Image (cartoon, rainbow, N blue to C red; front, side, top):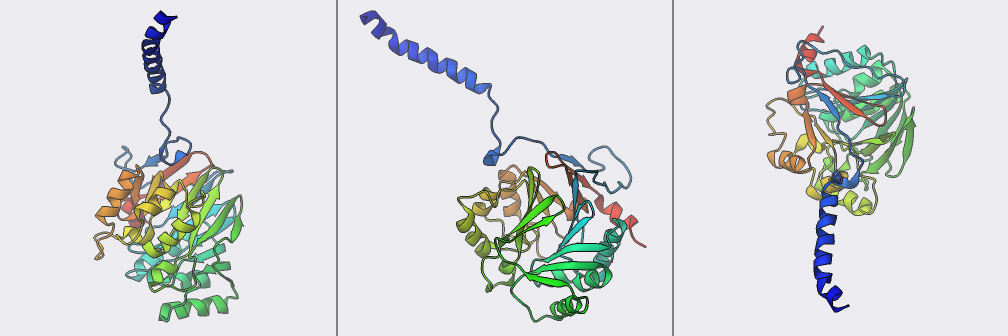
Length: 326
């Protein structure tokens, strides 16, 4: 018995070493605790492909999300079968990018827009909205509760009224169906903010196991409110983050990013823009979160296709935008 007790420390040490060796063979879970997967990203030139790539088309059981290159502005098109949503319709700094956006929608066969979401009233998000509303059959418009006094905002309201569009003030907690996808409004959590950016509509789109978080220009004030409200939930957790405010230093705080834990970060910004977007500190933050970063200033329009499991991204490059001109 005494001999056994003397050997006990050595037995425990051997067991510990054996457990460590076995543990080293186990897969390391990804950040955020989600299921492991590798999004497929195709960048012509980098991937060995030449020429202007075709715009990929979703097959049955898939949806496509198009982050349209509208320079220093925002516009994202979601196609789920015959259901259509457009999030923002930016126009900055000139009409060239608006014309490309309208042409891009028409080339995708868009005639009816089931949901037009205008995240907030700045021109780089609603500048092309009057033309969109007058060109396509817009059924519903989800709009930020905080108004603005700009002529662009007034023109947008006039177009909504003239075309008898059903206007829905954004309300956190409201959920909607778009074909087989669903989306939920997560912010803004107040009706009025000192900075109009913080009034941005924030929504999460879900399709199967995959999710995309659209944040408009929400800055740290709005982010902090959402972190506090959703910190004990998975509401903000998403596979893809449409990075807030064109990757400005005033958005995508570490606390917010930690809750989102994206695999892919999509930045919409203009080439050599005067704002210095994307901001270096936020790029470093995204890199620290191990997110793949795609940028419209470098990669042009980016098209995501998912079947609810796998995700594939095709970067159309600036050559596509040039070839699409009339």
